[in-house]
Amino acid sequence: MSSYKNLIAYKKAFELALKIHAVSRQFPVDEKYSLTDLIRRSSRSVCANLSEANSRRKYKDYFISKLHDCLSENGETEVWLDFSLSFNYILPVEHAELIALNVEVGKLLNFMINNSDKFL
Image: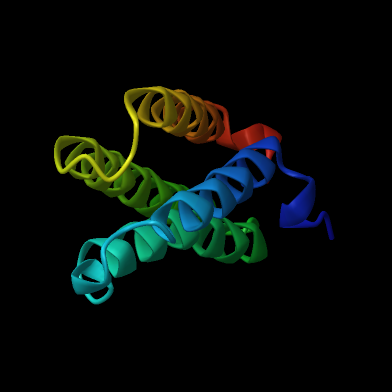
């Protein structure tokens, strides 16, 4: 069985989650149970859903459904990144770097959805 950890989408999503964790450590304490928690959860959820999708590769519809869950979480992460920038919690250069990686993850997930037979 092929490991989800070998998927480029997983590697990029994991990298993004780690970078988000690092920058969110600077968020104000009063954001601990709101924005900090939300952005960390959504970015990590992409990785977790990829793992779950991979474990169900023999069921095409389920596999694609979990990839769509990944896309949803990735989209949510983008929203939280935009809020982080708007609240001046991250610098524009950090935002641009994180958004670029977020977009790349989205493209990889879309590729997996549109070419699911290659991953089954």
